[in-house]
Length: 325
Image (cartoon, rainbow, N blue to C red; front, side, top):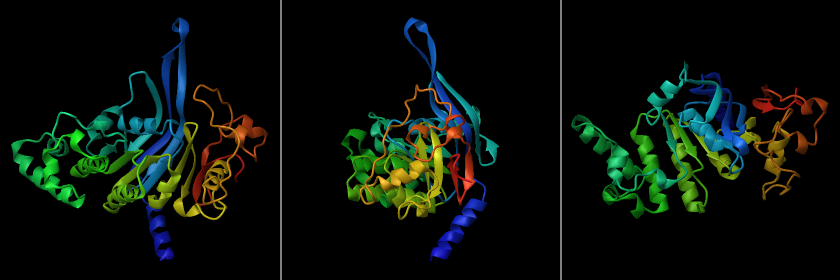
């Protein structure tokens, strides 16, 4: 069984990524006192890839800028945003125009908040969308099939968002995604505050999507939930990704993990050593010249304070560290 799983993983790694994000950086122009213009950097040289049939979890602390990564991919950043780098979807440049064409169709977002649902519109209309009479019957039939799959009763069609429970609202958002010919699904913090039953149910939706061939990007601060459902984990820290590891690498005392922060994160979990490390993530307005983890690292050297290490292949994964070779 283990060999079969390994073969599946190897086949995915050999196939072409559906979505590629290469060295993107994101900053915002802000104005301080006296109309002095400043630049706030929130993402720096971030790279990752998403594959069909696979769940990639982007794990980082709350408020660290993970949601902005989703907004950058979807092309829904505010006007004062400055985005650089390269994105590719299905072998083609993912330009601003292309993002607009694909958004809500082939690349979709499952938002954290149910406020994305229109409070004045009945659920059925929100899930099926605006369609002409020619397609209305087939869309309605598909919507009802999906509702049955996700245990949404027929009366839900006539409800308004405020009449739904939290669990029902999440299932409606997932149903909206399944109505379209989506290929990339980005789920933004879908699990906060869920009890074990609802957490298990929510994670099963993403497993189902991956099984159907979607490339799923799960953005979360909950590493334990991510490990239960994901194929790979991307560790988000100070606006970049420090490591992309296979879920199976999170075992023992983290011997197979490549970055000291990833190992520290793993060993800080209650079921492991429950051992925290000193310090905190750099603030977004801090100017950093070297490795973002430098001040907290126990294996740092002189070069670490002077240059930001690139994300490189090492031991079957990707890591941003000067001390691996």
